Length: 265
Image 1: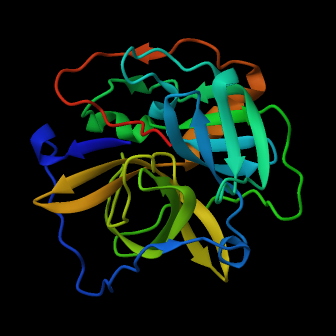
Image 2 (image 1 turned 90 degrees about the horizontal axis):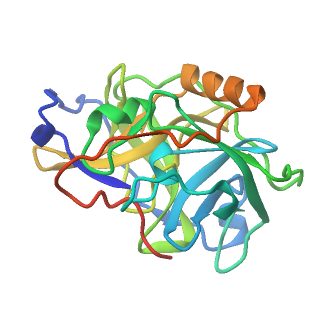
């Protein structure tokens, strides 16, 4: 996960929480089978020996994550899909399902800069094709939903540097602002949370509305940045059906910062 200082990058934002926004929920560690029931489609993505991100199952053989997770932090090179493993429902040393990655599709407009690049957030999306579909009754792919509006309640399930062995659920956080290029949210994320699904819950059903791209700060307030999904996911699925996805991708070297994308489990 990248740590971005939005104002330092010159992105002009006017963020004030609507008066009706309630308090965010605290993180809940999904330690037991009962706690994690229904969330098994969220998993840890092991990225070779470099570290991990978070991913979410959106079809029996498709996992959605952040595009920057698929690039080596130091060299900018694409990580070989064969070195990536999806651990569905990873909890206390065991996963509900283990799958390798056959192919990885990065959004064609995504440019990996490695550092503070807020412009890349809108394209920071990748679709992984698993080497085998997951067809277990306990692991259901998540559907997607429309982007939430400013002030709406959302939730997030994530792994992070200090909670790499058990996922955490923040049942309620809020949309501070919705822009064409991104969502700006109050959700509690940290290094390793890149690719974490942001959920809306309607009629008791959780649906994915965005993917965590980065953590950031606005006027001293910690925020999370989420990537738009609807059109980008349709594009990625189209490219997956076409049989593409092995090209190196675009790389731009930026100065300053270490990127903070990976943490070692």
